[in-house]
Length: 540
Image 1 (spheres, helix red, strand yellow):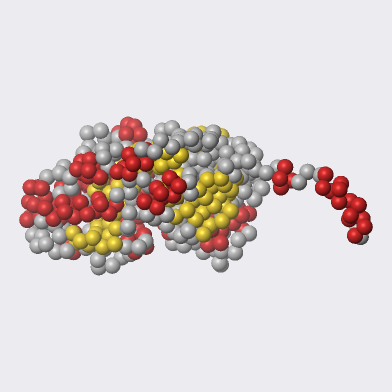
Image 2 (cartoon, helix red, strand yellow):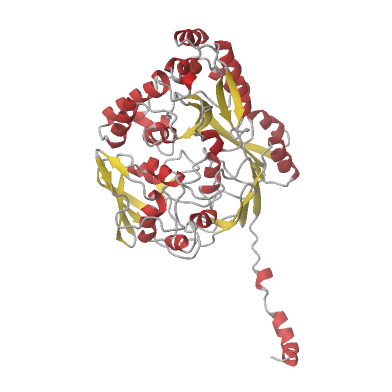
């Protein structure tokens, strides 16, 4: 068209609707202030197995075949699979939900599920052994290609999640079967746990490296990654083809604001709509302003400290036992948490149902017993380093300072050593002795916590802090046994070993998480770290 034609056509063009204005997205965008977005600077659910990762991943970005009721009691519900059934003690068949679209527009099929549990994606070149034989994980699937090598943390987590997975079979386009090399009564729970989430095979193949993919994974969740700035922010935008309905938000932006006061001030000023990780002593002050409220409470996560039994002063189990008896846990709950959490019955939760030991107790607070054990162990006041991050956990620094004084009263010389990140916390060195941690219960069986974190494939043994031969034998029995009574007895014996006889850790209190928000926003907090912004859980 020449200039004359353009001028003549201008009025007609002006009369046409302007898509950018006529179809403007009226959904709100929100900003959430968090202490940390992710620890690993990646968005790979297997690399980022953290409390902060759960908050930004689940219900927003990543989804599994079997989901969790994030707004209820966290039981299992249909997710990317509509139904499942047991074929045997070691096999489960699932029917996939039809019409589930990835963020790249592809439909999810059994091919994507098989790939999500393949050697290339999960296990790398590592091998597993069960009952004396090597398990050919992902047989027929390629190992990682050059440039797509997995960081060691990914197969390490995969082994904890699926220690005996043999293969995943695509029966047809919408049916898959999971085959385990050993009997496993917890396979449905493993399918619902962190890390058993589904990704697009094409999304993986179109990236040149694991890191490129891990900064912008292609998944099925109601929101997709728009921008990820490590150590700064994560911006998610609505995935309008989401199988669960149109997301209620146009955009969610998580921003890192390490200081509690800055998160609260930003909320009150309107800069943020949500502020996470609120300490209990700040709740009353926030709610004095009737425009704001704080939601939250206890979750399926326990705060604990972990021992490295290779440290000279901790080789004698009596010193570790003394440390467990010198802690007044109830005083910590009342003074630092204003009674808003509880001291649990060890590393277990009532939702374990018949596997739960209601009569179990954490080591009692008994200074006389702690001193007696130290005398027997001939402890002479040698310094014991205690590694922790700067308030990664709510009240972390204050709790550590209180415990150091409690230990001092028993005659223990524990010295706090601040670290900048988790790599420094876990680093093997002559000064690794005691560290902070927390353990969750991703599904309702002790395999999900005690075995997963402290058993032979658990992180504590993988990093070389602790091991116990009897504990490891019992872990195998718990993972592969099908007799409930025997499994329950094995679990109790494992608690006796890991919490009393040869302490691997000691539980401090049940964790709790509190989120502040504008009162006029209709949103319900989950009894977990996860923040649910799916259809039906946001309004203003």
